[in-house]
Image (cartoon, rainbow, N blue to C red; front, top):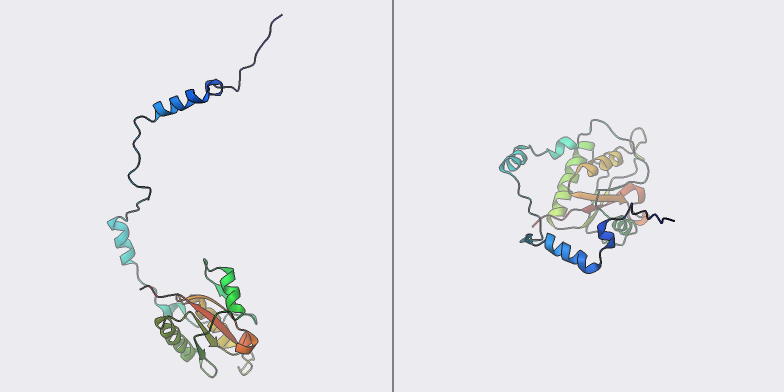
Length: 187
C-alpha cells in the first residue's frame, strides 16, 4: 500500500518557520538604504510654469454675459465641490451671521451685474464670510418671470469668490433673496 501526498499549492515558504523567514527577509534587504524624506517632492518644470503663465486670465464680465435668461425654480441652491453639506445647512438655517447685504430691487440687468460685482468684491476685501443679496421674486417684471433672480443665480455660479449660495429664510427675504458664502482672500 502506498500513501500519496499532494504538495501542489504549497511553497517552500509555507513550510519554513518564522525565524527562517525573518532571516531571508533581512538578507534580501541588506543592500537597501532608507529614503532621506517621507515627503514627495513635485517640482514643476520650467515649461509647465511658462505654459501656466501664458494662459490668459478669464475676464469675469465675459462669463457673466446676460445674452439669455436661464430658467430657475423658486428655491436657489448652489455649492462648489469641496464645500460640506453641513456648512450649507448652517447657512440655510440662519446659523451664520449675515455681515452685509445688497438689494437689487429696481435695478436693470446691466446695472445689477455691476452692483453685484462691486458689492461682492468689497465684501471679500472686508473679509466678510456671509452676505445676503436680495434679487426679488419677479412679481413686477413685464412677463411675470423673475429675470433678476435667474440672472443672479447664473452670475453667482460664475463668480470665483462665491463658494455657495442658498435661498434665505422667510424673515430675510425667502425665495426673493440668497445667502452668499464668500471665499477668503489669500493673505
